[in-house]
Amino acid sequence: MIDLKLLQTDFETISKKLQRKNVPVVTIESLQSKNELLKKARSAFEEAQATQNEMSKLFGTYKREGKDISELKAKVDANKLKINRLQQEQREAEEVLSSLVMGIPNIPDDDVPDGKDEDDNVEIKKVLTPPEFTFVPKEHWELGEANTWIDFERGVKLAKSRFSVSFGMGARMERALINFMLDFNRDRGFVEVSVPELVNRRALEGTGQLPKFEDDLFKIEGEDLFLIPTAEVPLTNLFQDEILPAEELPVKMTGFTACFRKEAGSAGRDTRGMIRQHQFYKVEMVTIAKPEQSDKIFDEMVASASDMLTALELPHRQVRLCTGDLGFSASKTIDLEVWLPGQDSYREISSISNTRDFQARRAKIRYKEGKKNRLVHTLNGSSLAVGRTLVAIMENYQNEDGSITIPDVLKKYL
Image (cartoon, rainbow, N blue to C red):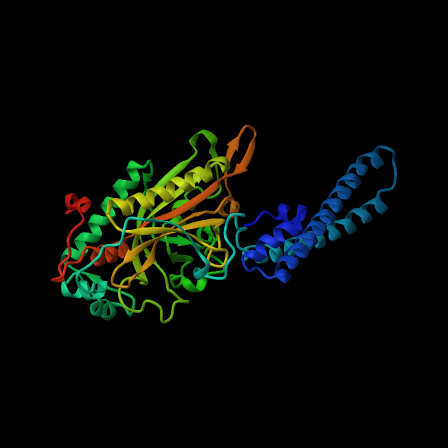
């Protein structure tokens, strides 16, 4: 959630920054006006309460002096009705503002490039050189079916389209990748955490998936529970409504979960294969940090995910997302895109984001600094998407006869 105090103190600057993230001017102006209405409602309520307290003190004075209290009592009773009315107006103003502000995205950092969509993202650097083949490389679905690693038809039979089943070495490779990723992150200082794959509405509001993106979530009928779209949600919300000691920060966590997404806005995109599934596995990194730590940790998380791909000898590039492609909660994001020879293109395999205090304000995650409570910064990143990593291995390590070589770093896990 954005800091409304910033909007009050420097409306023009914050308005321009939000417009970079495609927030309409009329929405920003409405946000400002609704915030002013709440301030006036709160001031009127507090003034009426103060008046009530002053009048209440007079009862003792009147009795000691033998004065008639009937007129004072009438004023007190009338003011009670006024307080009740003003309190209700304040609650209504709070609800209106809360509903509006929960749909406002985070403010982008100044160094985030302007742009409309992914075509305007800026490449930072390439890591490793894509392999050259003496044959036409196959796409992963051909390789998966030829090696009986992946069965897409049976996935559809068990559920529907965008589900798959892994068999034999395909399933073993997924398990090997998960263990490799968790071990790699643990060596980089991330504590391994196992979390629920069902969370409540409050948790999803805390990290910014709700209320705006409910259509992309799988909800449990009759329960206030949702299947998680990413482990970022439960890992970040572990500290919801908590005040952490400053000396315990940063808290660096990694966790493996299944992830579930309806992919509501992806009709016609990546309909074949494992690139865009309703259920997939992912190892996540999440860090809870002091504000002054977050930029350094962001760079470390990008480096960690990139080094993991390098250890797997997978060519990839780092890309800075533009304002039009930046996620709802992110202040800045760097994507890692892995080379897929079968598609002859780089495809996203990890996103590392710094959300600053946006999620912390929504989830009320703070830390104690002296006598003051301050909001933490939260960071998250894929490390990595397991299915897409398997896809990248299949396509980059394929041989002319259709077989697939196993990366050296995974052999001990097999």
